[in-house]
Image (tube, rainbow, N blue to C red; front, side, top):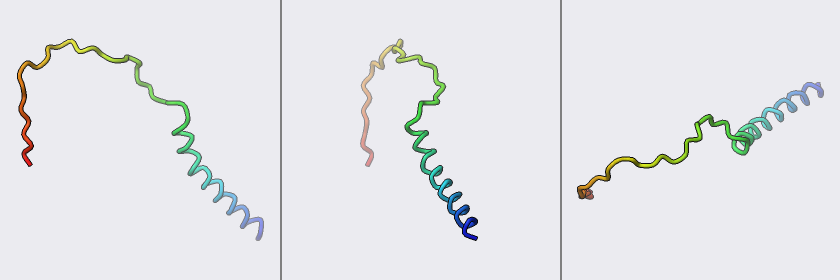
Length: 58
């Protein structure tokens, strides 16, 4: 009977530990982003020449 109770407690403790360790490992682990490293893109257009009035409308 005692072995069974300890087994249940051990599995509970393992599950609880995994519950906290997995997110922490994901946060502080290496990045898994697969985005291309393209950097900053220069603006090649024309700036807007007219002034725009913004009203509060509140």
